Length: 373
Image 1 (cartoon, rainbow, N blue to C red):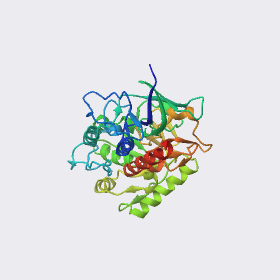
Image 2 (cartoon, helix red, strand yellow; image 1 turned 60 degrees about the horizontal axis):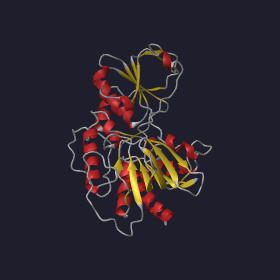
Image 3 (cartoon, rainbow, N blue to C red; image 1 turned 180 degrees about the horizontal axis):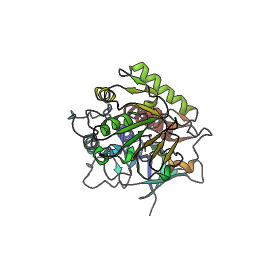
Image 4 (spheres, helix red, strand yellow; image 1 turned 90 degrees about the vertical axis):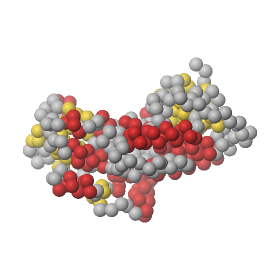
């Protein structure tokens, strides 16, 4: 299969990847030669401007639009999902608060791709990004659909495909069911079972509330949760993002912005607290066949352990570039990888929120235009 070329390859078509594609398109980049549209998508014929700064392609591993949103559980409604910022250029339609977020946002992302005629190929899974032997030569992007040669990569693969599972003694001897939030479908599958939810983030408390309405639950976290009564103001949000930015500048693995901001009391969660659902226990010390050993030595029977323990950045395909610092993270300069200025990470660390992803897409494209001259 011949090697195809594009000046910029964007990996991933979630919020961050679509933001990058929007800004590339807005700055005059054209679809790569031989762009193969997905079924049902026919881009309009348009003259390529003589002064186009280059070509681009978006490679997405999913079978359709929506990024990670298409996989969210059906009970996560638009009325309860955390605020989702508009994609750049086209605002969301007014949402029915009872519509599943997976359906609404998948439709919004799909309409966005069509209206802007973005050059997206899917399903294409990227397996590796490598340097050619000539260090000044192009980067090589190896995929399930062949190899691309490119001058710059914008990585927007997010975290959904890399759920984090902590390891505890006895974990594999547990005779009940263990699952991660990424595998969650509905509370109804747990009726009649005692469910332990592990994790201190927003997904953990939302699912505790939901599952506790059909069966019994217990809640375990490593640290005592911090609650707040109101939304962060602009300055507090800025300060939280700055803490995450400082970590990535030091080459440390990024923390999520949510881990810095704490948990927001909502009417639903206050009602859950009144029902006794949010009585948090310190992490158990071991998992046994029929339950867990509590930190005080007691035993808690369990049928299900739901790990709401977050995700890690899906960057395995970048391993051939050896970007990681001794601290385990990747040293960043804005969106640019300090050790490899041709690679930009968006939707990573401080840009993992939806508004952060939009800004990072614009910043990455601006830097790449400078790089390409």
